[in-house]
Image 1 (spheres, rainbow, N blue to C red):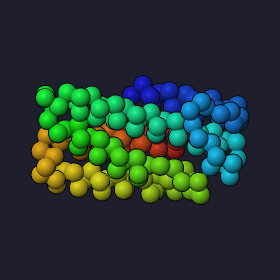
Image 2 (image 1 turned 120 degrees about the horizontal axis):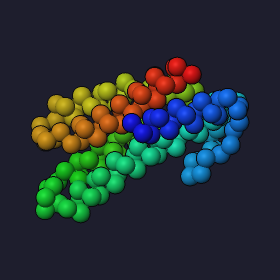
Image 3 (image 1 turned 90 degrees about the horizontal axis):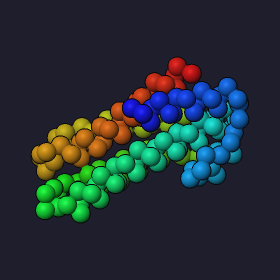
Image 4 (image 1 turned 135 degrees about the horizontal axis):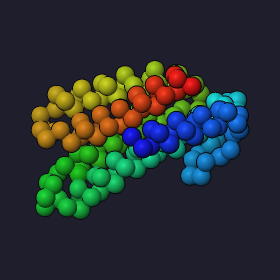
Length: 146
C-alpha cells in the first residue's frame, strides 16, 4: 500500500508541476511520443511496475534458495511473475488507458487460470498474479481520480 501512496503523490506532484523529469532506473525511450503530463505518468508507471515485479522475483528467489522449506513454490512464483511481466510491459504505442484496457483483463485471465490449476494447490502463483493485478487496479483507480 505504501507504493500506491508514493505513486499518487509522485503523479500529482508531476502533474501540478507539468514536468517531465526522468526517474532513475526507468527506460524512457518510449516516452518521447507523449506530452509532459502523459510522459511523467508513463515514467512513474514504468518505475512502479518494475518495483512490483522486482518484489515478486525477490520473493521467488528467497523461496528457491530455501526449497527445503518451500519445495517448488519458488519456481511457481517465478513462473507467475514472468508471465505477469510479459503482460504488464508498457508498449511504446499505447496510451495509459489502452494499457489498462489490455493489461487488467489479461491479468484477470491469468489469475483465473492459476485458480483452476491443481498444481498450484497452495495458491502462491495465484497470489503473485493477484498482488500484481491489485496493485495495477489501484494505480488505475488513482489515475482516474487525477
